[in-house]
Image (cartoon, rainbow, N blue to C red; front, side, top):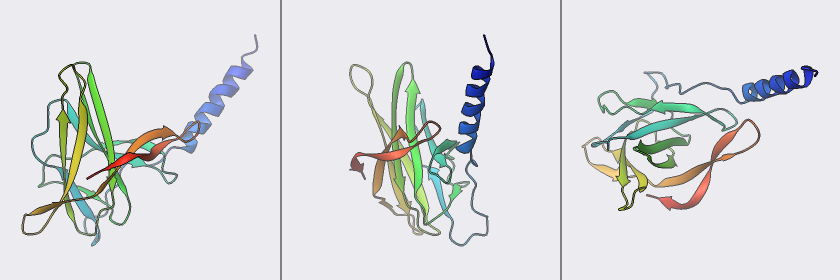
Length: 167
């Protein structure tokens, strides 16, 4: 048996994955006048995680970065471009996930509030609200778009609009 075809397949697979590789979340500089900030607000249900989805220049999924739960040390994000976030619950064989996005405004502060609605017979649904926190401490909800992850080729998975909106 000739090992060349299997080596060729492995080489093509590695090259394809490398084509979709990119950087993880890179925060804007601390002195950026346009950066926004985001953190998780309120109590987070056990088994729940809130993360920022990292995408490359082709909008292909590159990984996750946990969103801090400490409003005193928020994640800095770029304004003027769509940011994607995931709220995921995974515990005791029960799983749900929702992916939402919004476009942060310059110098704005946001709070992500995850929720899980259990069903009587297991399962349930996940949701996340995004509140824009005003300088006086009041907040207003952001309009969100819901997304699902779908294949966009052999080496790329990217967010695609889901049916319906969340707000």
